[in-house]
Length: 171
Image (cartoon, rainbow, N blue to C red; front, side, top):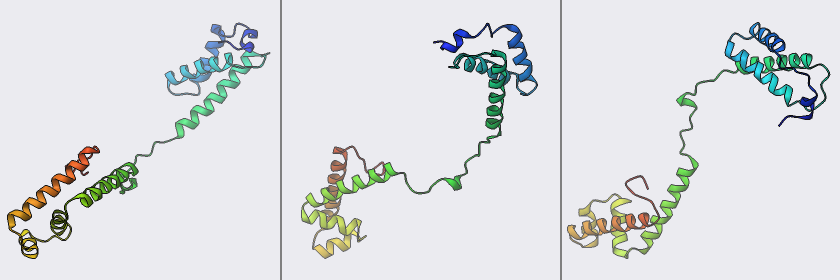
């Protein structure tokens, strides 16, 4: 869509003006392709200009100078490589939320376990007691303690799996 101002412009894209802009850019920009891009952008901006234009050539060169300033500014920007020291060692928010959800799911599953199974599991996993110590303290066989621990893990895995989590993947 051509603006109203562009309709009033004389034939500005003639080869004389284009050649003059190219020479102007070549003297100021080292990269030939960048100079060509700036010439094209000059004409794009000229034809999108909204106000009536009396001197299209002067406006072209004013636009070209402004584009050169912008080009020089962008060339001065240097990308700074990120080091590992700048990376935050804390987990990302979505990971924290996922772990909190998993903990809530496991807490609910623990509450729903039979009391003896929960007691055996907590003594084994949280208190760090050996199977023999738990069996002795609760007057149970070693096999019964091991079965309670296995069934407790199964209950937790099932509760997590129902909600899309997995113990193997860090919950």
